[in-house]
Image (tube, rainbow, N blue to C red):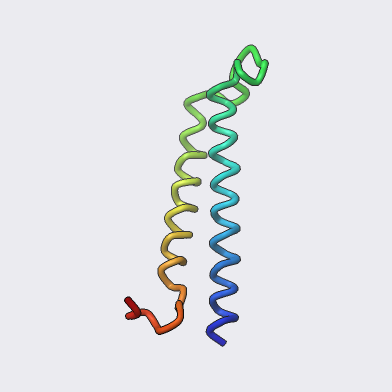
Length: 78
């Protein structure tokens, strides 16, 4: 049962980190729009803060779930 729970936690963590990574890539591409061959950003710079907040929340949630993974030996295993 622990293995199944750990597998679910790992899947949730991977999903959240992948979503955050995608959002951060969009923000970076938008910031470096000239390198992408664009004349102007495709998202107003003032609107990218929402993506940063969501990416930060996803990373924080993933970290909290990581702390719940039961590695061999239990939670007090050094």
